[in-house]
Image 1 (cartoon, rainbow, N blue to C red):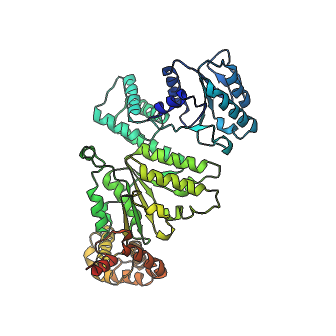
Image 2 (tube, rainbow, N blue to C red):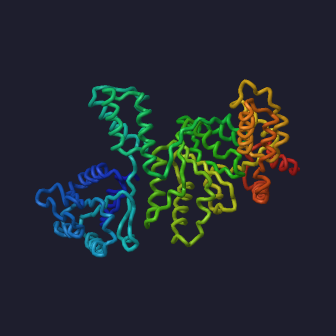
Image 3 (cartoon, rainbow, N blue to C red):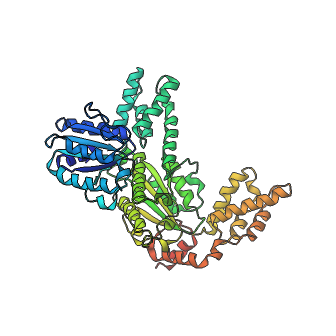
Length: 504
Protein backbone atom coordinates (compact mmCIF):
# COMPACT_ATOMS: atom_id res chain seq x y z
CA UNK A 1 0.00 0.00 0.00
CA UNK A 2 1.24 3.47 -0.82
CA UNK A 3 0.92 6.46 1.54
CA UNK A 4 -2.44 7.63 0.15
CA UNK A 5 -4.01 4.20 0.59
CA UNK A 6 -2.61 3.76 4.11
CA UNK A 7 -3.70 7.24 5.19
CA UNK A 8 -7.23 6.89 3.82
CA UNK A 9 -7.52 3.48 5.49
CA UNK A 10 -6.60 5.04 8.85
CA UNK A 11 -9.20 7.78 8.33
CA UNK A 12 -11.92 5.29 7.45
CA UNK A 13 -10.95 3.09 10.42
CA UNK A 14 -11.22 6.20 12.64
CA UNK A 15 -7.70 6.20 13.96
CA UNK A 16 -7.92 9.34 16.10
CA UNK A 17 -4.26 10.43 16.27
CA UNK A 18 -1.84 10.07 13.33
CA UNK A 19 1.80 11.19 13.48
CA UNK A 20 3.55 11.89 10.15
CA UNK A 21 7.31 12.56 10.32
CA UNK A 22 8.43 14.58 7.30
CA UNK A 23 10.26 17.76 6.35
CA UNK A 24 7.92 18.24 3.38
CA UNK A 25 5.20 20.11 5.23
CA UNK A 26 3.61 21.73 2.18
CA UNK A 27 3.53 18.52 0.17
CA UNK A 28 2.06 16.35 2.93
CA UNK A 29 -0.64 18.94 3.64
CA UNK A 30 -1.59 18.94 -0.06
CA UNK A 31 -1.81 15.13 -0.02
CA UNK A 32 -3.94 15.17 3.17
CA UNK A 33 -6.27 17.77 1.64
CA UNK A 34 -6.70 15.63 -1.50
CA UNK A 35 -7.47 12.59 0.66
CA UNK A 36 -10.04 14.64 2.59
CA UNK A 37 -11.76 15.56 -0.68
CA UNK A 38 -11.86 11.95 -1.86
CA UNK A 39 -13.48 10.87 1.42
CA UNK A 40 -16.50 13.12 1.10
CA UNK A 41 -15.16 16.66 1.33
CA UNK A 42 -13.94 16.53 4.92
CA UNK A 43 -13.03 19.89 6.38
CA UNK A 44 -9.30 20.47 6.94
CA UNK A 45 -8.09 22.73 9.76
CA UNK A 46 -4.40 23.68 10.00
CA UNK A 47 -2.77 24.98 13.18
CA UNK A 48 0.69 26.23 14.02
CA UNK A 49 2.08 27.82 17.16
CA UNK A 50 2.60 31.31 15.70
CA UNK A 51 -0.61 31.88 13.71
CA UNK A 52 -3.05 29.49 15.38
CA UNK A 53 -5.76 28.00 13.13
CA UNK A 54 -5.83 29.17 9.52
CA UNK A 55 -8.13 28.87 6.53
CA UNK A 56 -11.54 29.31 8.14
CA UNK A 57 -12.18 33.07 8.71
CA UNK A 58 -14.45 32.33 11.70
CA UNK A 59 -11.65 30.53 13.55
CA UNK A 60 -8.62 32.40 12.23
CA UNK A 61 -5.95 32.78 14.90
CA UNK A 62 -7.71 30.52 17.41
CA UNK A 63 -5.22 28.71 19.64
CA UNK A 64 -2.37 31.06 18.77
CA UNK A 65 0.65 30.27 21.01
CA UNK A 66 -1.56 27.87 22.98
CA UNK A 67 -1.23 24.15 22.07
CA UNK A 68 -3.78 23.07 24.69
CA UNK A 69 -6.35 25.45 23.23
CA UNK A 70 -5.57 24.02 19.79
CA UNK A 71 -6.71 20.60 21.06
CA UNK A 72 -9.78 22.06 22.78
CA UNK A 73 -10.84 23.46 19.39
CA UNK A 74 -11.31 19.87 18.15
CA UNK A 75 -14.16 19.47 20.66
CA UNK A 76 -15.78 22.73 19.52
CA UNK A 77 -16.39 21.29 16.06
CA UNK A 78 -19.70 19.42 15.88
CA UNK A 79 -19.45 15.69 16.73
CA UNK A 80 -20.85 14.58 13.39
CA UNK A 81 -18.80 17.02 11.29
CA UNK A 82 -16.11 15.10 9.40
CA UNK A 83 -12.83 16.96 9.82
CA UNK A 84 -9.05 16.58 9.83
CA UNK A 85 -6.95 18.75 12.17
CA UNK A 86 -3.34 19.22 11.05
CA UNK A 87 -1.04 20.33 13.87
CA UNK A 88 2.36 21.56 12.68
CA UNK A 89 5.45 20.96 14.86
CA UNK A 90 3.23 19.64 17.64
CA UNK A 91 5.92 17.15 18.71
CA UNK A 92 7.50 19.97 20.74
CA UNK A 93 4.53 19.99 23.14
CA UNK A 94 4.01 16.27 23.67
CA UNK A 95 6.10 16.22 26.85
CA UNK A 96 3.71 18.70 28.49
CA UNK A 97 1.52 16.77 30.94
CA UNK A 98 -1.64 18.75 30.13
CA UNK A 99 -1.16 18.29 26.36
CA UNK A 100 -0.43 14.58 26.73
CA UNK A 101 -3.47 14.07 28.96
CA UNK A 102 -5.71 15.99 26.55
CA UNK A 103 -4.53 13.86 23.62
CA UNK A 104 -5.34 10.69 25.56
CA UNK A 105 -8.81 11.99 26.38
CA UNK A 106 -9.40 12.99 22.75
CA UNK A 107 -8.24 9.59 21.50
CA UNK A 108 -11.14 8.02 23.41
CA UNK A 109 -13.92 10.29 22.24
CA UNK A 110 -12.75 10.62 18.60
CA UNK A 111 -13.11 6.87 18.05
CA UNK A 112 -16.85 7.44 17.68
CA UNK A 113 -16.51 10.65 15.62
CA UNK A 114 -15.38 11.23 11.99
CA UNK A 115 -12.56 13.49 13.18
CA UNK A 116 -8.80 12.87 13.04
CA UNK A 117 -5.83 14.76 14.44
CA UNK A 118 -2.67 14.65 12.28
CA UNK A 119 0.62 15.77 13.81
CA UNK A 120 3.19 16.82 11.17
CA UNK A 121 6.74 16.96 12.52
CA UNK A 122 10.27 16.76 11.09
CA UNK A 123 11.13 13.62 13.07
CA UNK A 124 9.59 10.99 15.33
CA UNK A 125 9.61 12.22 18.95
CA UNK A 126 6.86 10.28 20.72
CA UNK A 127 6.95 10.08 24.54
CA UNK A 128 6.54 6.60 26.00
CA UNK A 129 3.12 7.41 27.51
CA UNK A 130 1.69 8.32 24.07
CA UNK A 131 2.94 5.36 22.04
CA UNK A 132 -0.38 3.52 22.43
CA UNK A 133 -2.55 6.38 21.16
CA UNK A 134 -0.36 7.78 18.35
CA UNK A 135 -0.02 5.95 15.02
CA UNK A 136 3.18 6.82 13.12
CA UNK A 137 2.83 6.86 9.33
CA UNK A 138 5.92 7.34 7.18
CA UNK A 139 5.67 9.87 4.34
CA UNK A 140 7.97 8.86 1.46
CA UNK A 141 9.97 11.19 -0.73
CA UNK A 142 8.40 11.82 -4.16
CA UNK A 143 8.47 8.82 -6.48
CA UNK A 144 9.35 8.80 -10.17
CA UNK A 145 5.79 9.56 -11.33
CA UNK A 146 5.50 12.62 -9.05
CA UNK A 147 8.88 13.91 -10.20
CA UNK A 148 7.97 13.38 -13.85
CA UNK A 149 4.72 15.30 -13.34
CA UNK A 150 6.61 18.20 -11.74
CA UNK A 151 9.18 18.30 -14.56
CA UNK A 152 6.33 18.23 -17.09
CA UNK A 153 4.63 21.14 -15.32
CA UNK A 154 7.80 23.23 -15.39
CA UNK A 155 8.46 22.36 -19.04
CA UNK A 156 4.91 23.43 -19.94
CA UNK A 157 5.48 26.79 -18.22
CA UNK A 158 8.59 27.41 -20.36
CA UNK A 159 6.98 26.20 -23.58
CA UNK A 160 9.87 23.77 -24.13
CA UNK A 161 10.02 20.00 -24.34
CA UNK A 162 12.57 17.22 -23.83
CA UNK A 163 12.79 13.76 -25.35
CA UNK A 164 11.77 10.85 -23.16
CA UNK A 165 15.35 9.62 -22.60
CA UNK A 166 16.52 12.97 -21.20
CA UNK A 167 13.36 13.29 -19.09
CA UNK A 168 13.94 9.83 -17.62
CA UNK A 169 17.55 10.78 -16.81
CA UNK A 170 16.37 13.96 -15.07
CA UNK A 171 13.78 11.96 -13.10
CA UNK A 172 16.40 9.44 -12.01
CA UNK A 173 18.75 12.26 -10.98
CA UNK A 174 16.02 13.92 -8.89
CA UNK A 175 15.13 10.79 -6.93
CA UNK A 176 16.03 11.20 -3.28
CA UNK A 177 15.24 14.93 -3.20
CA UNK A 178 12.19 16.54 -1.65
CA UNK A 179 9.69 18.12 -4.04
CA UNK A 180 10.64 21.59 -2.78
CA UNK A 181 14.32 20.97 -3.57
CA UNK A 182 13.40 19.63 -7.02
CA UNK A 183 11.33 22.73 -7.76
CA UNK A 184 14.15 24.95 -6.52
CA UNK A 185 16.93 23.37 -8.58
CA UNK A 186 14.78 23.20 -11.73
CA UNK A 187 13.75 26.84 -11.26
CA UNK A 188 17.45 27.66 -10.99
CA UNK A 189 18.06 25.87 -14.28
CA UNK A 190 15.20 27.76 -15.96
CA UNK A 191 16.50 31.08 -14.59
CA UNK A 192 19.99 30.31 -15.90
CA UNK A 193 19.17 28.86 -19.36
CA UNK A 194 15.57 29.95 -19.88
CA UNK A 195 14.70 26.26 -20.11
CA UNK A 196 15.48 22.85 -18.63
CA UNK A 197 18.39 21.23 -20.48
CA UNK A 198 20.12 17.82 -20.34
CA UNK A 199 23.23 19.46 -18.80
CA UNK A 200 21.17 20.43 -15.76
CA UNK A 201 21.61 16.89 -14.44
CA UNK A 202 24.87 18.12 -12.83
CA UNK A 203 22.96 20.89 -11.03
CA UNK A 204 20.56 18.29 -9.70
CA UNK A 205 23.39 16.02 -8.56
CA UNK A 206 24.98 18.93 -6.68
CA UNK A 207 21.65 19.64 -4.98
CA UNK A 208 21.48 15.96 -4.09
CA UNK A 209 24.95 16.09 -2.57
CA UNK A 210 23.90 19.14 -0.57
CA UNK A 211 20.75 17.36 0.61
CA UNK A 212 22.73 14.31 1.70
CA UNK A 213 25.32 16.45 3.49
CA UNK A 214 22.58 18.19 5.46
CA UNK A 215 21.26 14.89 6.80
CA UNK A 216 24.69 14.35 8.41
CA UNK A 217 24.01 10.61 8.18
CA UNK A 218 25.05 9.68 4.65
CA UNK A 219 27.96 10.97 2.57
CA UNK A 220 27.88 11.16 -1.21
CA UNK A 221 31.16 9.77 -2.56
CA UNK A 222 32.58 10.51 -5.99
CA UNK A 223 34.56 7.50 -7.19
CA UNK A 224 37.29 7.05 -9.79
CA UNK A 225 38.56 3.64 -8.64
CA UNK A 226 38.17 0.78 -11.10
CA UNK A 227 37.91 -2.97 -10.64
CA UNK A 228 41.28 -3.18 -12.40
CA UNK A 229 42.79 -1.03 -9.62
CA UNK A 230 42.35 -3.93 -7.19
CA UNK A 231 45.32 -6.26 -7.02
CA UNK A 232 44.35 -9.92 -6.62
CA UNK A 233 40.89 -10.82 -5.18
CA UNK A 234 40.06 -12.70 -8.41
CA UNK A 235 37.10 -14.66 -6.99
CA UNK A 236 35.52 -11.47 -5.67
CA UNK A 237 36.10 -9.59 -8.93
CA UNK A 238 34.62 -12.43 -10.99
CA UNK A 239 31.56 -12.46 -8.72
CA UNK A 240 31.11 -8.70 -9.14
CA UNK A 241 31.62 -8.73 -12.92
CA UNK A 242 28.91 -11.40 -13.32
CA UNK A 243 26.45 -9.08 -11.57
CA UNK A 244 27.34 -5.94 -13.50
CA UNK A 245 24.04 -5.92 -15.42
CA UNK A 246 21.82 -7.12 -12.58
CA UNK A 247 20.23 -3.68 -12.10
CA UNK A 248 19.10 -3.39 -15.74
CA UNK A 249 15.56 -3.73 -17.06
CA UNK A 250 16.71 -6.75 -19.05
CA UNK A 251 17.59 -8.49 -15.79
CA UNK A 252 14.08 -7.74 -14.46
CA UNK A 253 12.51 -9.26 -17.58
CA UNK A 254 14.75 -12.30 -17.14
CA UNK A 255 13.36 -12.69 -13.62
CA UNK A 256 16.53 -11.85 -11.68
CA UNK A 257 16.02 -10.18 -8.30
CA UNK A 258 18.16 -7.19 -7.40
CA UNK A 259 21.50 -8.13 -5.79
CA UNK A 260 21.29 -7.54 -2.03
CA UNK A 261 24.86 -6.89 -1.00
CA UNK A 262 28.22 -8.12 0.22
CA UNK A 263 29.90 -8.52 3.58
CA UNK A 264 33.68 -8.27 3.24
CA UNK A 265 35.47 -9.68 6.27
CA UNK A 266 39.23 -9.63 6.51
CA UNK A 267 42.48 -8.14 7.60
CA UNK A 268 42.96 -4.37 7.65
CA UNK A 269 44.52 -2.82 4.56
CA UNK A 270 43.63 -5.64 2.16
CA UNK A 271 41.39 -3.61 -0.17
CA UNK A 272 37.89 -3.95 1.31
CA UNK A 273 37.08 -0.22 1.17
CA UNK A 274 38.71 0.11 -2.24
CA UNK A 275 36.41 -2.66 -3.47
CA UNK A 276 33.30 -0.74 -2.36
CA UNK A 277 34.42 2.31 -4.35
CA UNK A 278 35.33 0.20 -7.38
CA UNK A 279 31.90 -1.49 -7.41
CA UNK A 280 30.13 1.87 -7.59
CA UNK A 281 32.38 3.08 -10.41
CA UNK A 282 32.13 -0.14 -12.42
CA UNK A 283 28.34 -0.40 -12.07
CA UNK A 284 27.86 3.36 -12.70
CA UNK A 285 25.88 3.78 -9.49
CA UNK A 286 26.07 6.54 -6.82
CA UNK A 287 28.06 5.59 -3.72
CA UNK A 288 26.64 6.53 -0.33
CA UNK A 289 28.80 6.03 2.74
CA UNK A 290 27.03 5.43 6.05
CA UNK A 291 28.77 6.34 9.28
CA UNK A 292 26.72 4.21 11.67
CA UNK A 293 27.87 6.31 14.61
CA UNK A 294 25.87 9.21 13.19
CA UNK A 295 22.67 7.23 13.53
CA UNK A 296 22.80 7.54 17.29
CA UNK A 297 21.31 10.72 18.78
CA UNK A 298 20.91 11.91 22.33
CA UNK A 299 17.13 12.40 22.36
CA UNK A 300 14.63 9.61 22.97
CA UNK A 301 13.58 8.12 19.64
CA UNK A 302 16.10 10.17 17.66
CA UNK A 303 18.34 7.19 16.79
CA UNK A 304 15.42 5.14 15.48
CA UNK A 305 14.20 8.16 13.49
CA UNK A 306 17.63 8.67 11.92
CA UNK A 307 17.78 4.99 10.98
CA UNK A 308 14.42 5.24 9.21
CA UNK A 309 15.56 8.45 7.51
CA UNK A 310 18.74 6.73 6.29
CA UNK A 311 16.74 3.82 4.86
CA UNK A 312 14.22 6.15 3.23
CA UNK A 313 16.95 8.26 1.64
CA UNK A 314 18.95 5.26 0.40
CA UNK A 315 15.85 3.71 -1.16
CA UNK A 316 14.85 7.01 -2.76
CA UNK A 317 18.30 7.25 -4.37
CA UNK A 318 18.20 3.63 -5.58
CA UNK A 319 19.73 2.07 -7.54
CA UNK A 320 22.80 2.90 -5.48
CA UNK A 321 25.64 1.40 -3.41
CA UNK A 322 25.39 1.82 0.36
CA UNK A 323 28.87 1.46 1.85
CA UNK A 324 29.14 0.72 5.57
CA UNK A 325 32.79 0.74 6.61
CA UNK A 326 33.88 -1.23 9.73
CA UNK A 327 30.38 -2.37 10.60
CA UNK A 328 31.87 -4.54 13.35
CA UNK A 329 32.73 -1.43 15.38
CA UNK A 330 29.29 0.05 14.87
CA UNK A 331 27.23 -2.87 16.19
CA UNK A 332 29.68 -4.56 18.57
CA UNK A 333 27.70 -3.45 21.63
CA UNK A 334 24.15 -4.38 20.65
CA UNK A 335 23.78 -6.65 23.69
CA UNK A 336 24.78 -3.86 26.07
CA UNK A 337 22.08 -2.46 28.32
CA UNK A 338 23.90 0.82 28.92
CA UNK A 339 21.92 2.78 26.33
CA UNK A 340 18.43 1.58 27.31
CA UNK A 341 18.28 -0.73 24.31
CA UNK A 342 18.80 1.97 21.66
CA UNK A 343 21.62 0.05 19.92
CA UNK A 344 19.49 -3.10 19.83
CA UNK A 345 16.52 -1.29 18.31
CA UNK A 346 18.66 0.44 15.67
CA UNK A 347 20.38 -2.85 14.86
CA UNK A 348 17.02 -4.66 14.69
CA UNK A 349 15.60 -2.09 12.28
CA UNK A 350 18.71 -2.26 10.13
CA UNK A 351 19.00 -6.06 9.79
CA UNK A 352 15.25 -6.41 9.22
CA UNK A 353 15.59 -3.97 6.34
CA UNK A 354 18.60 -5.92 5.03
CA UNK A 355 16.56 -9.12 4.98
CA UNK A 356 13.33 -7.70 3.58
CA UNK A 357 14.36 -4.85 1.26
CA UNK A 358 13.08 -5.04 -2.30
CA UNK A 359 14.70 -1.83 -3.53
CA UNK A 360 17.92 -1.87 -5.60
CA UNK A 361 20.19 -0.72 -2.76
CA UNK A 362 23.36 -2.83 -2.88
CA UNK A 363 24.90 -2.85 0.61
CA UNK A 364 28.68 -3.28 0.88
CA UNK A 365 29.69 -3.75 4.52
CA UNK A 366 33.29 -4.24 5.65
CA UNK A 367 34.50 -5.76 8.92
CA UNK A 368 37.91 -6.43 10.44
CA UNK A 369 36.86 -8.24 13.61
CA UNK A 370 34.37 -11.01 12.98
CA UNK A 371 34.18 -11.74 16.73
CA UNK A 372 32.44 -8.40 17.25
CA UNK A 373 29.77 -9.04 14.61
CA UNK A 374 26.37 -10.13 15.99
CA UNK A 375 25.46 -13.61 14.79
CA UNK A 376 22.29 -12.24 13.14
CA UNK A 377 24.49 -10.23 10.76
CA UNK A 378 26.11 -13.41 9.43
CA UNK A 379 22.86 -15.29 8.84
CA UNK A 380 22.03 -16.16 5.22
CA UNK A 381 19.61 -13.73 3.66
CA UNK A 382 21.18 -10.54 4.99
CA UNK A 383 23.80 -10.49 2.21
CA UNK A 384 24.19 -12.36 -1.07
CA UNK A 385 27.66 -13.48 -0.07
CA UNK A 386 30.27 -13.16 2.67
CA UNK A 387 33.83 -12.94 1.32
CA UNK A 388 37.02 -13.30 3.32
CA UNK A 389 39.82 -10.98 2.18
CA UNK A 390 43.15 -12.50 3.21
CA UNK A 391 46.70 -11.16 3.08
CA UNK A 392 47.91 -11.21 -0.52
CA UNK A 393 50.00 -14.09 -1.79
CA UNK A 394 53.36 -13.50 -3.46
CA UNK A 395 51.74 -13.40 -6.89
CA UNK A 396 49.13 -10.91 -5.65
CA UNK A 397 51.82 -8.76 -4.01
CA UNK A 398 53.58 -8.61 -7.37
CA UNK A 399 50.32 -7.45 -9.00
CA UNK A 400 49.84 -4.79 -6.28
CA UNK A 401 53.40 -3.47 -6.73
CA UNK A 402 52.84 -3.37 -10.49
CA UNK A 403 49.59 -1.44 -10.10
CA UNK A 404 51.12 1.22 -7.86
CA UNK A 405 54.36 1.56 -9.80
CA UNK A 406 52.57 1.78 -13.15
CA UNK A 407 50.70 4.76 -11.70
CA UNK A 408 53.73 6.37 -10.02
CA UNK A 409 56.39 5.62 -12.66
CA UNK A 410 54.60 4.47 -15.84
CA UNK A 411 57.66 5.11 -18.06
CA UNK A 412 60.21 3.44 -15.75
CA UNK A 413 58.24 0.41 -14.63
CA UNK A 414 60.77 -2.01 -16.16
CA UNK A 415 63.59 -0.85 -13.89
CA UNK A 416 61.83 -2.30 -10.83
CA UNK A 417 62.30 -5.95 -9.91
CA UNK A 418 58.69 -6.87 -9.16
CA UNK A 419 59.44 -10.51 -8.41
CA UNK A 420 62.08 -9.56 -5.83
CA UNK A 421 59.79 -6.96 -4.25
CA UNK A 422 56.97 -9.48 -3.91
CA UNK A 423 59.29 -12.18 -2.56
CA UNK A 424 60.87 -9.98 0.10
CA UNK A 425 57.64 -8.49 1.50
CA UNK A 426 55.93 -11.54 3.04
CA UNK A 427 52.80 -10.87 5.09
CA UNK A 428 52.49 -7.30 3.75
CA UNK A 429 48.97 -6.05 3.05
CA UNK A 430 48.07 -3.83 0.10
CA UNK A 431 48.01 -0.74 2.33
CA UNK A 432 51.43 -1.59 3.74
CA UNK A 433 52.83 -2.02 0.23
CA UNK A 434 51.50 1.42 -0.70
CA UNK A 435 53.06 2.95 2.41
CA UNK A 436 56.38 1.23 1.58
CA UNK A 437 56.40 2.90 -1.83
CA UNK A 438 55.67 6.30 -0.32
CA UNK A 439 58.58 5.87 2.12
CA UNK A 440 60.86 4.82 -0.76
CA UNK A 441 59.88 7.95 -2.67
CA UNK A 442 60.87 10.05 0.36
CA UNK A 443 64.27 8.33 0.35
CA UNK A 444 64.85 9.04 -3.33
CA UNK A 445 63.51 12.60 -3.16
CA UNK A 446 65.73 13.51 -0.20
CA UNK A 447 68.78 12.45 -2.26
CA UNK A 448 67.67 14.25 -5.46
CA UNK A 449 67.20 11.06 -7.47
CA UNK A 450 64.48 8.62 -8.42
CA UNK A 451 63.69 5.81 -6.03
CA UNK A 452 64.86 2.29 -6.82
CA UNK A 453 64.05 -1.31 -5.95
CA UNK A 454 66.67 -1.15 -3.19
CA UNK A 455 64.96 1.95 -1.74
CA UNK A 456 61.65 0.10 -1.67
CA UNK A 457 63.20 -2.88 0.12
CA UNK A 458 64.99 -0.57 2.56
CA UNK A 459 61.67 1.10 3.34
CA UNK A 460 59.99 -2.31 3.72
CA UNK A 461 62.61 -3.37 6.27
CA UNK A 462 61.54 -0.48 8.49
CA UNK A 463 57.84 -1.44 8.45
CA UNK A 464 56.47 -4.04 10.86
CA UNK A 465 53.42 -5.52 9.12
CA UNK A 466 50.12 -6.01 10.91
CA UNK A 467 50.50 -9.75 10.36
CA UNK A 468 53.15 -9.69 13.10
CA UNK A 469 51.70 -7.10 15.48
CA UNK A 470 48.20 -8.66 15.37
CA UNK A 471 49.22 -12.24 14.65
CA UNK A 472 46.69 -13.86 16.99
CA UNK A 473 43.73 -11.92 15.57
CA UNK A 474 44.77 -12.70 11.99
CA UNK A 475 45.18 -16.40 12.75
CA UNK A 476 41.68 -16.43 14.24
CA UNK A 477 40.25 -14.78 11.12
CA UNK A 478 42.03 -17.21 8.82
CA UNK A 479 40.85 -20.16 10.91
CA UNK A 480 37.27 -18.83 10.83
CA UNK A 481 37.38 -18.54 7.03
CA UNK A 482 39.10 -21.92 6.61
CA UNK A 483 36.20 -23.52 8.52
CA UNK A 484 33.92 -22.61 5.59
CA UNK A 485 32.29 -19.57 7.22
CA UNK A 486 33.07 -17.36 4.22
CA UNK A 487 34.01 -17.55 0.58
CA UNK A 488 37.62 -16.81 -0.40
CA UNK A 489 38.00 -13.47 -2.20
CA UNK A 490 41.26 -14.66 -3.81
CA UNK A 491 42.02 -17.74 -5.84
CA UNK A 492 45.69 -17.37 -5.06
CA UNK A 493 45.79 -16.27 -1.40
CA UNK A 494 47.89 -18.21 1.11
CA UNK A 495 44.79 -19.50 2.86
CA UNK A 496 43.13 -20.53 -0.43
CA UNK A 497 46.17 -22.57 -1.35
CA UNK A 498 46.18 -24.23 2.06
CA UNK A 499 42.48 -25.13 1.78
CA UNK A 500 42.99 -26.57 -1.71
CA UNK A 501 45.80 -28.79 -0.42
CA UNK A 502 43.62 -30.06 2.45
CA UNK A 503 40.78 -31.13 0.13
CA UNK A 504 40.83 -34.79 -0.99
